[in-house]
Length: 266
Image (tube, rainbow, N blue to C red):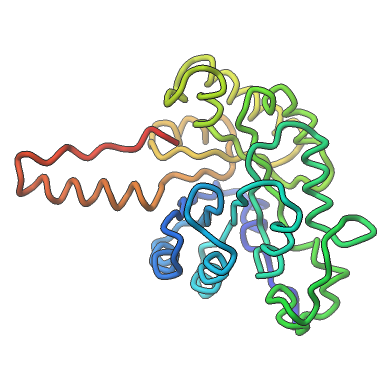
């Protein structure tokens, strides 16, 4: 059996911007529905959604037949958790709150087997190898793995050039919400100071020759970041979309219903 192709990474190498959806329901059923809607990639959120490793496995299995490529966000930098997520078949990981090149380099090592890293060998026990069905998995696993590091703090912005230049970091994702809070402008990623930091990060990542992404559920924001050079953009959050649609529907029948609005807490 050949190594499964990382379709997310392949998409980044193309000319088209990759549009994604944040998947926060933590169920395979909801993830499968999202995978049928045409998004290029889905972010299975292990940081803020109530996900466990078995729940993430179920979502990976649910979306596997579809064209939406899964990206799994970890809750932290724990190499043991990264090992588990890779073993269940995640090929693209997004790791939050990376603030310096040393952290980035440690994450790269967690993604790779010795002598280039510290990932433990699961062999025939794990889905990633298709239970030892993939030929030469240990030698070639890194070729289809993608590490996205999140820069989402003032310290991360200060060190973004070194983070992006770290060998083995495949892409950088800017987090507007945490960045705005860290800069003293909570729930206001549109503040000029925050926007200046985002623009700096985008340019720095581009200078390093790496793809840069961002979360932007507001269309005007998404189009602005695209024009600035972002190559993969999460343009929606499944939970927000459900809530907005439900509120808009009931507003058709009840005068007291609140008007639906796009979430600004991203």
